[in-house]
Length: 456
Ligand SMILES: [Zn+2]
View 1 (spheres, rainbow, N blue to C red):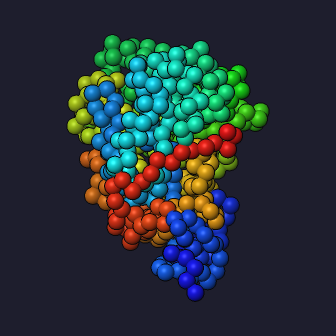
View 2 (view 1 turned 90 degrees about the horizontal axis):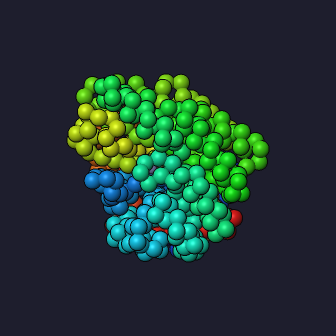
View 3 (view 1 turned 120 degrees about the horizontal axis):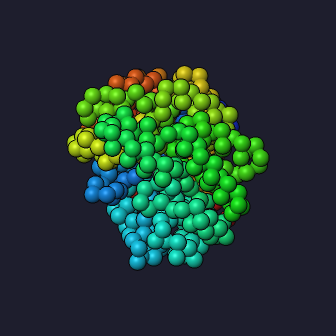
């Protein structure tokens, strides 16, 4: 008897709750059955393979204008690379022009993604100083399916503490979630100027101008502001123990603070900035890579639940654009690519290295990001959820390089990294995106997903 459109047979299902030997039946784009001996019109043997939820990356910058540059992956190439790496949903960003309404900006960005995206997507609404007079519009943005709001404490569009508080209050009233890039911009600017003034212009002065101590200070300050506004809080790209300590203390006191880290902070260190010429400029990102020794505590924080998500902050720029600013580290465009390799990096260096259990891996990369950001039908293998599924081969050897990866950028910080484990098949709402490692999706196949937070 054929009950399903598609059945993934004989695999090991991995969820945030555990592992299970059962078949997964897909019907009408949803997961419709989880049990032994299911039958479908199409049956895929997954013997010896892991079946996981599609991975969810809640921090990506695709065809994103930053200064005079635009990130090199667009909504097609970026989401194709994501799908090849087992990611089936991403959250990108919207920024409104000074005179533009938040909803207009959202509609514009949605239109850009709609024609090109392979996988499902959502957007965080960025709140800049221009948007403080528009905070009454926050409720409309939440209603439109964008309940998460990005705030910067760094760069020209940073918010001051009072503005952060006002925004948090408005977001709380609307049932949304504030997100923060936490760094201390005044201190960074001062250190940058001091270093440049005495000829310290090499990339190695980039991390030395953005100290971990002050990332911790900024995180502590914004955690306090969230407490004052009585709102949950999500902190982006935690790079160091100084931030983890603040999060752990707040959580121990019952405050709902959540946070992510990224592969670059788990796997790379600041010795990369000492490499000669352009190589030293490539890994520039903010917060910066930290000294050797800062990485292991981040893994431990993920395992014990003081960090919750591994996202990428995928923000690729061409090698030439990085190299062009070599004479002044503060002008090097910041950002690293990893939209394709995140899930597998977390498997090899998390599960494979004994730092995370299989369930913790799926939780950090799939389930928690979906839950925290309000993808109500993603991130889990359960009946009624979208059939966003990955069949992962835990024995597949892969050596990362720009030849094996499909990101639209001419370098990777993971060049030469040897992985064991890579996605073999990726399905989005029951449709094949990747089959036997080959991309078979179509531009425009991805949909905007209206997200709803559990609290709203
Ligand atoms: Zn970012």
